[in-house]
Length: 209
Length: 147
Length: 137
Image (cartoon, rainbow over all chains, first blue to last red; front, top):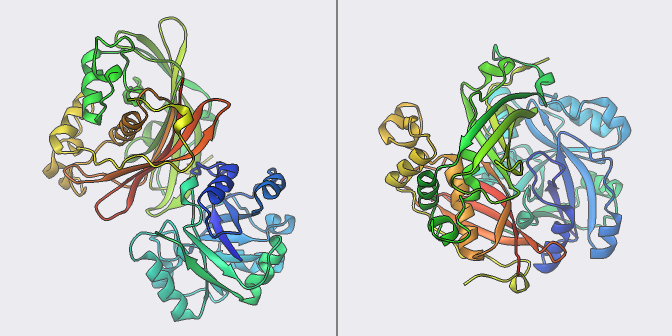
């Protein structure tokens, strides 16, 4: 199944898309997506309940976060209460090493995103300060990448033996599904997603036209 | 780090009020330069002649920032504008605009750590009708010290 | 010819728009917007002295260009909200492409939402946003 692992709704400061409109767009455009993950900036959206939309549109909608670390932005999957006590999701200079360690200890998974992007991507920081040993997965396909940025991410993954995921980084409705991650196993919830990421049965796919 | 300190208590406090008279020649030039072709924006004889909706974003007050944020504006970039239009604004209208800081937040982007200040300007016309609201997101690349 | 609400569908694309951002037009805009005191909007050489790639198009002109594209397509449609994010500089005397696509259609309020983008010649998105447009018929 294909999941877009990186998207933002109006809950993010720079998101301009309503979740229902993502669903309508996926159906109207017949996108090859079985679901998407909302990764709101610097927060976890505890309030929203998208189960009715899931039922209406037959699309899986999962919730996650995008936090900001000293090595760039990081997607956090499997967010739970323990994790939210372990570090401040609203901070902009978290320690990547700590975020990865705490996320995994609390049952989740941390995945640096758009690694090829200046300042907010892993590659530039690796170049200056060396690698972080606890990284195992990075986002190698990002729908918001400029020319050369995904290539830099793929090169980084090859150099360090990381697995790669894909996500659109959609902030507008029409951007959803530009990139995704293909999983070999069915995913029904956040726990399944974390398990699949840990098992490594996935690949990043680009659906850019 | 910058030497400018941000006091987030400034959020919500009105710090400027100005009166503006909307000028027809400026509206026509604004419309032409943006490529507007509909006669309601380009033809003063049109029955519904009005200024282009985004023109309201050009108005600035006497103060761009409250006293407590005076140093912030130097070195800022325009990160975006949200324009809400509630009723047409026509040349000759006399507008009263009030300014406040709607939000202050920090994040990191392609160019590094950034602080955003959202300046909100609300416009009321000569009949007391609220006609527009503009949120202006100003960004400065160096993070400021939050209190 | 004005569009009618009933003729609009989710996914409809606006005609691609190539705005005229020659420096003389940007100067004209800067004058009307009372921004012409800032040389970065009116003079390539002075803008380069400030470290910019050339004279830049004011963000509110890019926003106005996108609004004009929506008006040019919708006719009598009324923009109730336009929300633009200025992601990168737009340089005068270049040839950007503006696009729009309908991403929400609400019969209850007779409004639509259009996703808006402006891309530079390197296909980088310099401005993005949305417009909410109301139709009376």
